Length: 363
Image (cartoon, rainbow, N blue to C red):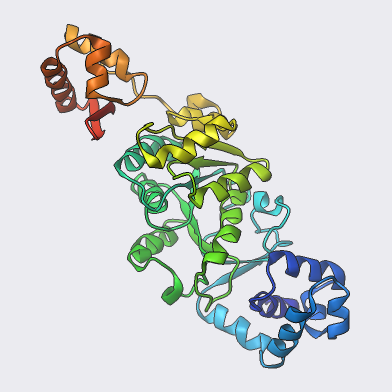
């Protein structure tokens, strides 16, 4: 049976003018959600909250029934966990402004879960997809869960790749958890699969809340706050992904980066973060080390064995990272036609893979 204060907390966070910091301030000053809900305007003003939102809150609570709000969430199958509950994610509790109330569909991450946040551009390209297919399956085998935001691009890629590898993944949303507000709609199938395989949809926003651009920075602090480290896959210089990376740094969490092509605008943010001291990753073991795990828990694929002199010239170059054909021609000093022929033969043996733009990497 739920205690009486929960309904008042649901009602309190349902008032849109009180953000996470305001709610925390009110609770710290007045003791509990019921006390905040019933406090006179003068007492609310003494907490340091501005008068305008207080006046709006007084009007809001006069026409809001906390019992009805709580019942709507329960009937819709939405779970609620408070920051003081035993089931509240342990790492999220450590950030300076944790959500006082977390809404969930599915299974909350266990307190001892090892989670990696994966973020990147909504315009994530084939390189991002290839990188995640290269990095995430070994992490899944090592028991790492993936957190992202269910958005288009890199978020969706991270969720799909994790599910395909048999892993558990969680999505933090910038909307309420009623299905008509969960977006994008074409990711509903992914979301339901996540819930059905031990993952969850999470939000600090009550049902009925429509996603708004102002919600995303707050959502991003939860994504990074849930995880021990954040992996940045792609992003332009002004990408919203940079906010998540900054928040992770402020939360004293490691920021890991997938290096990209110097010719791609989507590599601007990863390379800027590398200049700021973020950790480059090229394999799952790099990530496990960033998570504080033993790298030998993830077996690495042995490098392909060259079967002729041409392969012996190209494979060591590709072991340094993805390279374009023209660069391989210059570095190997082999004729261009021979380089292309050798790469084709290696690709047929699943030893290398083209990742777009006449660029190849080891498979």
